[in-house]
Length: 298
Image (tube, rainbow, N blue to C red):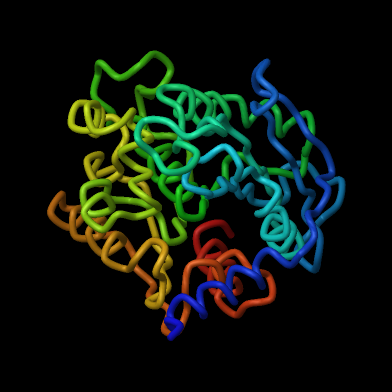
């Protein structure tokens, strides 16, 4: 007998991944590694003002895929294009992910690289205003919103919390003051590593990201969004109640941790929605995401 939840997840994933990749309007490098690049999508649609400098909010997209090597930014390009067609300037960031070969007792490709995955996100965000000025002058870095899906949702939350990282964080990670952001919209994020590991999210990907069980406790204070609160940055989480990839309990744990730290994080729970409709331009949930971003950006 098949599991209806698994069947639903498979159908939602098939729909989300059925859209062909969308070629960006321009691409820029923020480092020398082949994965250290940003794709830019120019704003279009009714709100767009082509050729007008700083006319559109800048939405920074961080893709998911459990920080694993086989999953790159291409699968989220239709979502980036979806946002651009609603008048946003969009930056789709690539970053170094895990090895393509199993190790660290993983059944499949290991999740992430320590410290390179975090090095790249920090470097990309630091370089972004300058890159956007050259590649996409319509983008207004003063109206920047971070968004990310799944593991990318984790990275978006982490990037917004760099100013509250421990003082002995690796070089280049910690900011002396809050980043210039309108806010963060995290989509089914892996936002609480302790709960994620208890639930076995993505095959223990968060522990793999931190270098395996031996490094989990020591590195978690530098990497887990639930340990980096409060941030003082407006934050919203969008989560499907039927998500079996990153269950609702992970987002709820992050929101609860924020409340304990004295910070309110918005949580939008979508009935009968799983993991992938949040980035599927054909799904109603994707329009909900765009509206959440709009409320922060415009």
